[in-house]
Image (cartoon, rainbow, N blue to C red):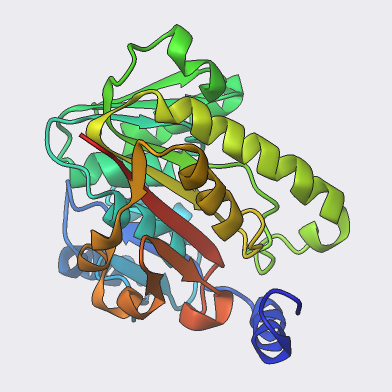
Length: 289
């Protein structure tokens, strides 16, 4: 209430009490939306178009993971808000990309699809079993431009050349307050103290990632929380401490039409009630040449 006011918070809480529909992203590297709808029809599965993301579909009923469409790699299960990240990132064919906190690989594979399976994406995660998940997802989707590694992204400078990557994504560990609809247990396990600890980790990862971005390159910061301390304040502090970067205000040109109203300068803030989706935050920084 202190951050958003009573009415906005009430609307957020109400939306978080409604059941979420399973949302999928069409693998444009292999297929297109109309073909996927047709394939679902053949399996007796009913889906509808997303009202906000052109390559997203929503399940009317049934578990889409059990379908041949899923098994053959035509789709990925991903929330619409999470899909906005790859639009903001706008990777180009042949680039070198780092996904610093990648598991289970939803955003990694979306970036890979946008690059049409060219270039190289290094996808890092702390845990071995999560690295396995990234590899399994990439294989199912037919993507060969992803290399997953078990690594703490804060140690990136020990493994990669300075200013090596064209674009880096830091989808940071966060309180998860934007995904209460899917993970209601967060209500009982998170405290304000946790948030203070998380903001330190988020900034630490950003500070290390900053050294690996090429001049003219991009650093994208995202979270699945609605907490301003972890979002706007972390982004502002990063820019304050890194005068070699500036907020990239051209992101409004890259996001889908329905997302444009939620862009403020170099940031995108999605509250759950906006799209009936997860709460999400994205900021984009560009390194000066």
